[in-house]
Length: 367
Image (cartoon, rainbow, N blue to C red; front, top):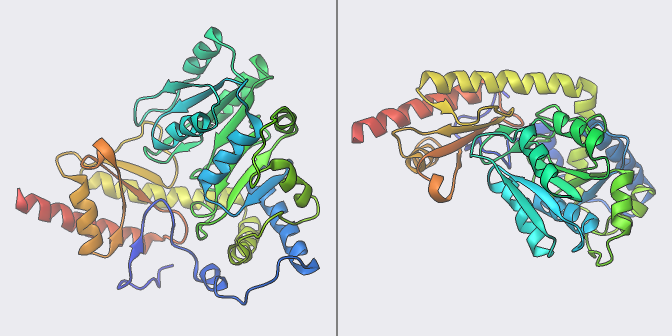
């Protein structure tokens, strides 16, 4: 993407992200009717491609929703008021698991992790030693801090010591960018979305579902309507969706999955990592520190130090036409985040770093 026009806004946020021109152009394709044999054949290829990126042999269902919609589907389909969930809160999106559980009156207890840290297996073991839980809900990559979770170790522990527990993982910002092996790691339900590692427009949510998860679903009496896993599974088997899908994004998804499979997921992840390393090396030279102790790929949360993070975001946006991600609440002035998902190449990273260097000098002059 070195031909990227320097006069247009550059998105180095955590979603939506920059798309390849070929994929972007597909968004203006002629609209298609979804209840045809041709579209079912296309969906069949898409469903196979989604299995590939989730690394699963289980069904991967697709919703016309954001990632949060898929998260709610994961809670409302498999857990009920008679269950007790344990969730990891290391930031905004870990906390969201608790919010969704409470909205559905599902008892839920929290493992609180300091911002920027990753949950330790010992914390999970300690929680299970004290109480019985039906499910564990956590994140592969906590998008608000950029901290990566060791899902593999947690999955091995649950499989060995608590095989009855449902393992649910939010991999919204981790899928494609970071290694994630749903079946090998014992993940029963994994949710993601279209607008991050897949580098597509927002509007598609995904959920992989194991046989164990479906047995949990059979015991949930107060079933959701729009997100009912059984309706989606019935339609998945005939390469369809129960309700109107996001047709335009699906056309883009089909081509994106083709490209990922032809190149290989592993090569794409290595490429993402090279760009992430380039970005972080540049940030280090400017005096910034990565916040996460175990940082995820493509999500870089930065402690802004003596500079006001909100001012950095504003100057980058208004003066240099570059969007980076602000933080909210008490971290508004201390943390900003940078994403390098999608069609971000070395030229875009260098442009961003150059603008950030000028921004820092401007803030120094104002002190």
